[in-house]
Picture 1: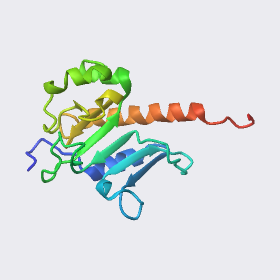
Picture 2 (picture 1 turned 30 degrees about the vertical axis):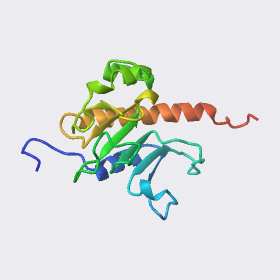
Picture 3 (picture 1 turned 180 degrees about the vertical axis):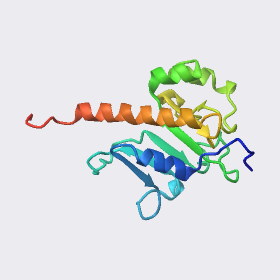
Length: 170
Protein backbone atom coordinates (compact mmCIF):
# COMPACT_ATOMS: atom_id res chain seq x y z
CA UNK A 1 0.00 0.00 0.00
CA UNK A 2 1.26 3.46 -0.88
CA UNK A 3 1.00 6.00 1.93
CA UNK A 4 -0.32 9.50 1.31
CA UNK A 5 2.41 11.72 -0.07
CA UNK A 6 4.23 8.83 -1.74
CA UNK A 7 3.97 7.47 -5.21
CA UNK A 8 5.04 4.33 -6.97
CA UNK A 9 6.07 4.03 -10.57
CA UNK A 10 4.50 1.13 -12.41
CA UNK A 11 6.02 -0.88 -15.21
CA UNK A 12 3.46 0.69 -17.55
CA UNK A 13 4.61 4.18 -16.45
CA UNK A 14 8.19 3.29 -17.34
CA UNK A 15 7.24 1.76 -20.69
CA UNK A 16 5.17 4.82 -21.58
CA UNK A 17 7.98 7.20 -20.61
CA UNK A 18 10.81 5.37 -22.38
CA UNK A 19 8.79 4.45 -25.48
CA UNK A 20 7.93 8.15 -25.78
CA UNK A 21 11.60 9.08 -26.25
CA UNK A 22 12.58 9.69 -29.90
CA UNK A 23 13.50 6.59 -31.86
CA UNK A 24 12.81 4.10 -29.07
CA UNK A 25 11.40 0.65 -29.66
CA UNK A 26 10.00 -1.10 -26.60
CA UNK A 27 9.52 -4.84 -26.81
CA UNK A 28 7.93 -7.00 -24.15
CA UNK A 29 9.23 -10.52 -24.66
CA UNK A 30 6.63 -13.15 -25.45
CA UNK A 31 6.08 -16.23 -27.53
CA UNK A 32 4.84 -13.94 -30.32
CA UNK A 33 8.13 -11.98 -30.34
CA UNK A 34 10.14 -15.19 -30.61
CA UNK A 35 11.87 -14.56 -27.30
CA UNK A 36 13.03 -17.45 -25.13
CA UNK A 37 10.34 -18.43 -22.63
CA UNK A 38 12.48 -17.39 -19.65
CA UNK A 39 12.31 -13.76 -20.86
CA UNK A 40 8.54 -13.62 -21.40
CA UNK A 41 7.10 -10.62 -19.63
CA UNK A 42 10.40 -8.72 -19.47
CA UNK A 43 10.61 -5.47 -21.45
CA UNK A 44 13.58 -4.31 -23.52
CA UNK A 45 14.20 -0.75 -24.74
CA UNK A 46 16.24 -0.15 -27.89
CA UNK A 47 17.24 2.95 -29.75
CA UNK A 48 15.92 2.09 -33.19
CA UNK A 49 15.03 5.20 -35.20
CA UNK A 50 14.65 3.18 -38.42
CA UNK A 51 12.45 0.50 -36.88
CA UNK A 52 14.68 -2.30 -38.17
CA UNK A 53 16.46 -3.35 -34.99
CA UNK A 54 19.46 -5.40 -36.00
CA UNK A 55 19.81 -8.59 -34.00
CA UNK A 56 23.16 -7.51 -32.52
CA UNK A 57 21.81 -4.26 -31.07
CA UNK A 58 21.58 -4.37 -27.28
CA UNK A 59 18.99 -2.60 -25.15
CA UNK A 60 19.90 0.52 -23.18
CA UNK A 61 17.34 -0.31 -20.48
CA UNK A 62 15.18 -3.24 -19.43
CA UNK A 63 12.46 -4.17 -16.97
CA UNK A 64 12.82 -7.64 -15.50
CA UNK A 65 9.94 -9.20 -13.58
CA UNK A 66 11.36 -12.48 -12.30
CA UNK A 67 14.52 -14.26 -11.26
CA UNK A 68 16.53 -16.13 -13.86
CA UNK A 69 17.35 -19.28 -11.89
CA UNK A 70 21.04 -20.11 -11.80
CA UNK A 71 22.00 -16.74 -13.25
CA UNK A 72 20.24 -13.69 -11.83
CA UNK A 73 18.56 -14.24 -8.46
CA UNK A 74 20.19 -11.66 -6.16
CA UNK A 75 17.23 -9.25 -6.38
CA UNK A 76 14.67 -11.90 -5.36
CA UNK A 77 12.32 -10.75 -8.10
CA UNK A 78 9.97 -13.68 -7.54
CA UNK A 79 8.36 -11.74 -4.67
CA UNK A 80 4.82 -10.55 -5.45
CA UNK A 81 4.74 -7.18 -7.21
CA UNK A 82 8.50 -6.73 -7.42
CA UNK A 83 10.21 -5.74 -10.67
CA UNK A 84 13.62 -4.31 -11.50
CA UNK A 85 14.38 -1.42 -13.82
CA UNK A 86 17.87 -1.78 -15.31
CA UNK A 87 19.70 1.08 -17.02
CA UNK A 88 23.00 1.17 -18.93
CA UNK A 89 24.60 4.30 -17.52
CA UNK A 90 28.19 3.80 -18.68
CA UNK A 91 31.42 3.69 -16.71
CA UNK A 92 31.70 7.34 -15.73
CA UNK A 93 28.11 7.74 -14.53
CA UNK A 94 28.23 4.37 -12.77
CA UNK A 95 31.22 5.50 -10.73
CA UNK A 96 29.52 8.83 -9.91
CA UNK A 97 26.41 7.01 -8.71
CA UNK A 98 27.94 4.03 -6.95
CA UNK A 99 31.31 5.30 -5.75
CA UNK A 100 33.55 2.82 -7.53
CA UNK A 101 34.23 1.96 -11.18
CA UNK A 102 32.28 -0.87 -12.79
CA UNK A 103 35.43 -2.98 -13.16
CA UNK A 104 35.90 -2.91 -9.37
CA UNK A 105 32.36 -3.98 -8.53
CA UNK A 106 33.26 -7.59 -7.72
CA UNK A 107 35.25 -6.25 -4.75
CA UNK A 108 32.20 -4.29 -3.51
CA UNK A 109 29.43 -6.79 -4.15
CA UNK A 110 28.93 -7.59 -0.47
CA UNK A 111 28.29 -3.89 0.26
CA UNK A 112 24.86 -4.01 -1.39
CA UNK A 113 21.50 -5.54 -0.58
CA UNK A 114 20.13 -6.21 -4.05
CA UNK A 115 16.66 -6.98 -2.66
CA UNK A 116 15.91 -3.49 -1.31
CA UNK A 117 13.28 -1.51 -3.19
CA UNK A 118 13.35 2.15 -4.25
CA UNK A 119 17.12 2.49 -4.01
CA UNK A 120 19.60 2.96 -6.83
CA UNK A 121 21.97 -0.02 -6.89
CA UNK A 122 24.62 -1.54 -9.13
CA UNK A 123 23.07 -4.22 -11.31
CA UNK A 124 23.69 -7.56 -9.56
CA UNK A 125 24.94 -9.21 -12.76
CA UNK A 126 25.87 -6.41 -15.20
CA UNK A 127 27.52 -3.87 -12.89
CA UNK A 128 30.88 -4.52 -14.55
CA UNK A 129 29.34 -3.35 -17.83
CA UNK A 130 28.16 -0.06 -16.29
CA UNK A 131 24.54 -0.99 -15.50
CA UNK A 132 22.58 0.18 -12.46
CA UNK A 133 19.14 -0.87 -11.29
CA UNK A 134 16.28 0.01 -8.99
CA UNK A 135 13.57 -2.31 -7.73
CA UNK A 136 10.10 -0.75 -7.76
CA UNK A 137 11.06 2.92 -8.22
CA UNK A 138 9.05 5.29 -6.03
CA UNK A 139 9.56 8.58 -4.18
CA UNK A 140 13.28 8.20 -3.56
CA UNK A 141 14.30 7.15 -7.07
CA UNK A 142 11.60 7.93 -9.66
CA UNK A 143 12.92 11.32 -10.78
CA UNK A 144 16.50 10.08 -10.88
CA UNK A 145 15.44 6.97 -12.81
CA UNK A 146 13.67 9.12 -15.44
CA UNK A 147 16.76 11.30 -15.75
CA UNK A 148 19.07 8.29 -16.07
CA UNK A 149 16.76 6.72 -18.68
CA UNK A 150 16.86 9.95 -20.70
CA UNK A 151 20.65 10.09 -20.42
CA UNK A 152 21.02 6.42 -21.42
CA UNK A 153 18.77 7.02 -24.42
CA UNK A 154 20.79 10.08 -25.46
CA UNK A 155 24.10 8.18 -25.09
CA UNK A 156 22.81 5.30 -27.18
CA UNK A 157 21.40 7.63 -29.82
CA UNK A 158 24.68 9.52 -30.05
CA UNK A 159 26.70 6.31 -30.23
CA UNK A 160 24.58 4.75 -32.95
CA UNK A 161 24.05 7.95 -34.93
CA UNK A 162 27.85 8.40 -35.13
CA UNK A 163 28.06 4.98 -36.81
CA UNK A 164 25.27 5.58 -39.32
CA UNK A 165 26.33 6.54 -42.82
CA UNK A 166 25.74 10.19 -43.59
CA UNK A 167 23.62 10.99 -46.66
CA UNK A 168 25.75 11.39 -49.75
CA UNK A 169 28.70 9.51 -48.25
CA UNK A 170 29.71 6.00 -49.19
